[in-house]
Length: 285
Ligand code: AMP
Image 1 (cartoon, rainbow, N blue to C red):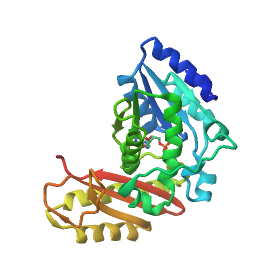
Image 2 (cartoon, rainbow, N blue to C red):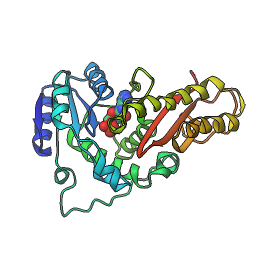
Image 3 (cartoon, protein in one colour):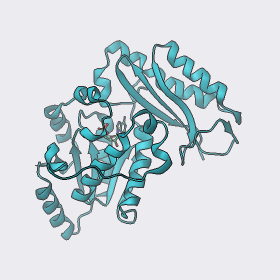
């Protein structure tokens, strides 16, 4: 594993690899790595010669300053975890390396509807921050394929849109990896480190609730099942931001299901002061 801290050096090194005919795969992360992140590296290696993983806790995507300050940073452990994988390059830029001082970083991305719902409305400015960092990372790495986790369902859609806005849809493929879960169903997440043992057990109720929605799904009105899902979470002590069922391709909210539309259920809820998100595709088509 080669470690780069400077964008120019990484860019030049990768250019050289491309000239040798090597394809590049990319896994952007914010570190505090878990098996979910490592699975992305493994999947990327199946489709690219060189796997680049970045660790960068992006300040511009945190709408809540306290959340940014509390975000876990475990670089030494991350490097040890990565050394057991098929990674070729670790990119560890500083904030100034990504957001050069003195430059204007206030560009706006026209994301349209997907930015107005769910994570978009709960975390104002979050997806603009995601686009700012991903645009910069993609320009440095210029990958053939980027692997993202379905755990961040809406983020996958936003990054697809960003790649389209950058005019790179034909050049950069996007792979979506399934969500890796703990034995109890809790989606792996860097934020789980901030949960107590007891809370980790309780947090499995999120996945149970998503499965409950899937089990109860029938064509027709979905309001009651959503209400019961909300109550399940609240009764368990979660502060729920949203539980919703949406069209899996557009994220348009669905209250009345025609029985054929592809659906996804999405949840965001706080357990104590830790914000957790998860989702489940409800239909097979
Ligand atoms: P993060 O470090 O949280 O920004 O995540 C980096 C990448 O890992 C994103 O594409 C996430 O969707 C993905 N990821 C996060 N958690 C999981 C998980 N449990 N399983 C698979 N991928 C994940």
